[in-house]
Amino acid sequence: NAVIHLVKIIVDTAFNGTAPTASVGIAGTTSKYMGTSDVDLKTVGVYEVDPGVVANGSTEALIVTYAADTSSAGAARVLVSYSIPS
Image (tube, rainbow, N blue to C red):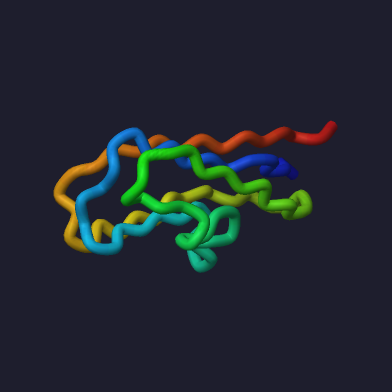
């Protein structure tokens, strides 16, 4: 029953590929919480999304989907803030 409040990708070192992408979601819906258009891996910065998705009564395994394209270098961190209502 967790609620995801914030998804943040921090690009520490810009990726050097033509069009690298990243998203945060679950299997089958890889952009459920943060879509590829919400982050620019080619630009150093902090990208945040408040998904505004209601609590899900079942277990979800979060995944980060990354496509390097032609990237051979770059660094980013992914942070997810959530709470479990009681």
